[in-house]
Length: 578
Ligand code: PEP
Ligand code: MG
Image (tube, rainbow, N blue to C red; front, side, top):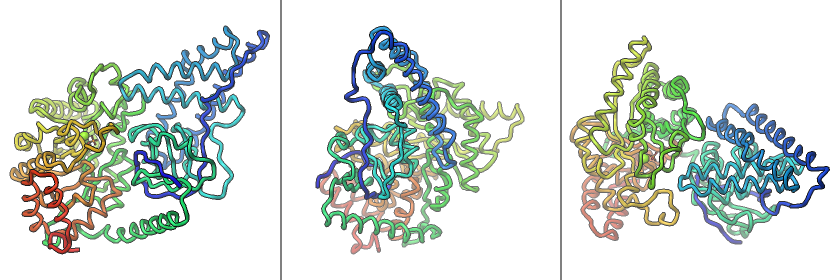
């Protein structure tokens, strides 16, 4: 028995037998083709491309209604690579001009092309290198005469173990109970899809495919990012119990769906949902969310070559608004860049993309693109309550310019006779320390604030939120971060502006008493966390927490601060009566 660690994508615990997906790009046979046969050998490449194309198109045609919205565009990228001259003509030339076999030609050319992408600093471009390798894998499987994603005939539930997996293959294997993947981080395509498909998965395991054998028993704890290989009976029994308990606890929590989120001392709290695609609004509603506190619109723009036009955006926003049945939907304007790259940014050369022209900076630099998005949001406001949220504010003039453009978008719709709501609230994300320290200034100019603790932590501590090597230093509970959060909540409350936390911290039950004690009354989180946070709210006494949290915020010493924080959760001492 041994365990491997990777990046957790969530989704619970899966227990099953390993099924390894063989990488084709390694150990590719290399041999000479006789001169009279090279033309036929080159034809094999063309046939393989045609077959791979057909297979991908079939995956698209057979996509179920429940498939994530980005699935089609991920497959489109692979279809485009299949037409890439550098890959196709380059491979043919290796056969025709140098007389090597088709497999070797495809593998060599793909590695060379992918290697070029690997040299980019930019995460988006590096991801394209992975796409090229995934396409080459498909071609090699086709050349070997097998289908790219063959289903297996085993009755046992299977856990797929792969060095990497293409979006199309993941979709074909969507009945799997889990994915253990060596490459990639939490923002890779595989990760995005696995989360949307709600399949327990871990990425970044590094050597799982090498160390695991077919049919090994695996325990995949996707919440902890731990993969246990060949567990002994005792561990297996423990995890089976944990799995059953988790299911039971989930069922028990469901009873809270319609219970109002009110603290022991009668303070009402609003629990909202974060969504990335309009299709997730339904889950938000089912979890009893008071509204959508953050719709990350950039997911509509990612993993595709073009920009979504006004109608496509409008339809996505409208669908979310309609699904929320009268509850407000807070749509954040494009927050692309750094860890969320889009094709339209590929020409931006930034030494440090996290500090570059991203989010609101990009939108204001591209007013025409921004206006398209604003019009789409305003059109959706005719179907329910829409709130517009501006990401990554640091300067007052960013608010002024955005408000001017919103006014312009309104006028354009009015002139065209297109309906929109009479009033749409505009809020700002507080996720840069400068904005947190100027929270009152932003609160005066805007209708509401939303605190993005993910970036606030990153920028306060100078820790890249996606860099594994400094992950241990990424700490949203650092006293400096907590003071910025508390100061923002205080400023907004004083000016009677709505304020929420929509970073991951809002979905952590351990942080609920802390945030309640800071005076937070709106939490926005992944729908899966909503009921666990509600349970915390129901057990808390906001009055008692308020004075205890003041003490936490005064503590300079991290050890003392932690002890005081733990004290907030102590049921014996009144803050938490459960
Ligand atoms: C945040 O930074 O906390 C946030 C909610 O935005 P995102 O995670 O999308 O950057
Ligand atoms: Mg952010």
